[in-house]
Image (cartoon, rainbow, N blue to C red; front, side, top):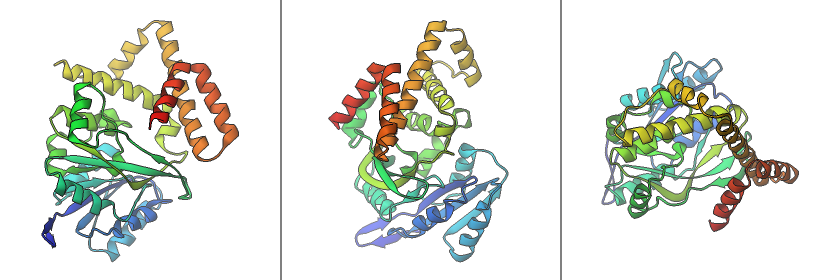
Length: 321
């Protein structure tokens, strides 16, 4: 479907929503999508084998809004569930979000306008508000740089990794499919690998320097439950990216862990020390945003003891913003 808005042609956008056990937040997420100021969209939902009441919530909304297509399958994980939905999509563009996050009402309108103004840009993301389990805002997730093609090309020249928010991502459906979509072997950091694979394939991803999403932080998210796995997977992804850019074949995560196990005890110790510093520093950041000042002092002190150079570098980067 194509809608004419003044002199502009409005493309159909497919909103991609894989769901797994998010009954607590799912209704708010769906309502934020249906309330978009941009209305030429379809919402495609897959219940990925949820064991809570997520499927019931999906069926309720599907019955009352014809823009929603819903599917119900056995659990396969976020990557395969997302790829499944993109293949079902009819839109020129796919907009992604997680089932516990919230769209601001103008998100789709702003991103569609951005891509109409920048037709050679294949993907975009945005900044986000942090919200807690109750939906209270307590800070902002901002990504610096990558707001222009020139900044993007400069980042590539410097061999920097592309980092942005997946929950604010909009990608050309054709580009998503051609690049292979999300890869399960890189979960739970499959989005980070996908951003950088876009760059490797010659596509452009820019960050709209506006807040278009609310990103929910809660204890059940994988980044809080398994920080060591997240750090290991990011290191693994970076290793695979270097291999690909060197013309070599990727290795498996199991092979990567064997390489790490063969390292000296000092290297292992320093990696663990650094990762722990990163974990405490992140907790310090959320503590100060939540105005938990005593917790902030504790977390930042421990992080500084573990890796003073890391903390000083991060603090200086924060000040420069």
